[in-house]
Amino acid sequence: AAAAPAAAEWALGAPPPPPPPPAAEPIRFEQDSLFAIASTLRRLDVTSCHLDDDAVELFIVFQELETLEMTKNALSSVDRLQQLVSRLPQLRSLKLAGNPVASKAKFRERVVLAACSLELLDGKPVRAHERQFLTSMVRQSQSRGESRKPRPATAAAAPGDRQLLSRAGRPPSIGSRPSRPLNFR
Image (cartoon, rainbow, N blue to C red; front, side):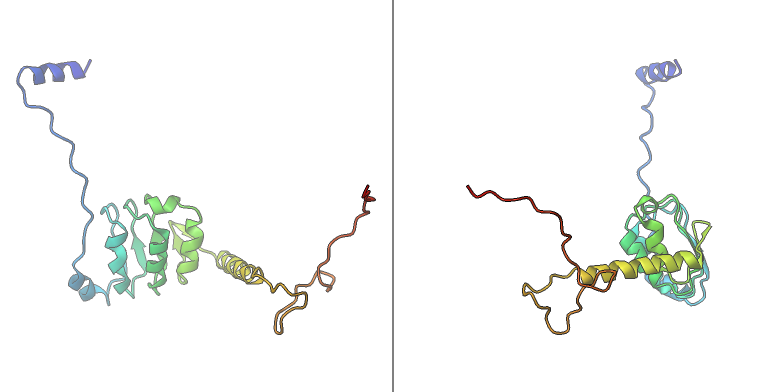
């Protein structure tokens, strides 16, 4: 019912409704300006600035940055975010809620591992035991990947190869089961 008068006005010669506003362009930073403030900047809040992964790439010059708030932007790549935070040695607090990247699988874990000095991620503390657990998981994963390398096809192990042992300290073996008699007729 509310739309009926507006439609009637438009039909009577009133101007059509204005088009929706165009999508906002991400803010782009002038490189010389970033370098000028890089040595003194400790806190940066770029909330709702329509920043994408390319726009924040230059933030690596902020080597003294301790707090970075980038909520409600268009960040989508966990890999690029990891590269950024791993190059910010003083970063203690990071806020990323409202970005597509925050809904990606293993987002928190990957950011915590990449940012060695991070203490708060989206307002939640990064505890020492969380970082230790994640680090040990990565190490275990890497060592499992190394032990699954293809082995030589020969029966004897190649010199220098480590032989896999069971928990009892013996080489793994195939469990024995009673076999059924074979009839070759």
